[in-house]
Length: 134
Image (cartoon, rainbow, N blue to C red):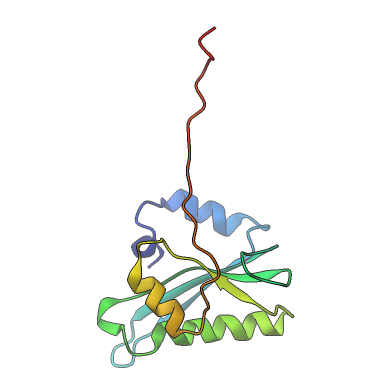
């Protein structure tokens, strides 16, 4: 399921994440109603801060995925509510998340789940040349 969420990630990256004691990432899965199969996945971490948040640390919804056949049945919302309950039990007061600026489906889900949009950014990168040409 994580591979469906982040198709470019490798098994080695996942293993490294799970082996890192400082990663503070937890994953939950949801089971389907009719057949015993996994239909949803949420990955939540803890960050020292997040845009628009007033407290620290902040629970951070790193990613969420629901099988196409199980969408619009409350699976993703149940995973978010579970993340909130775990964070609350650990004394964390805020849950943050993000999505790509052009991902309207994710934005709509976040709004429907009670998230409030706090900021929009466009990120840039530039490779530093190996030498300055001198």
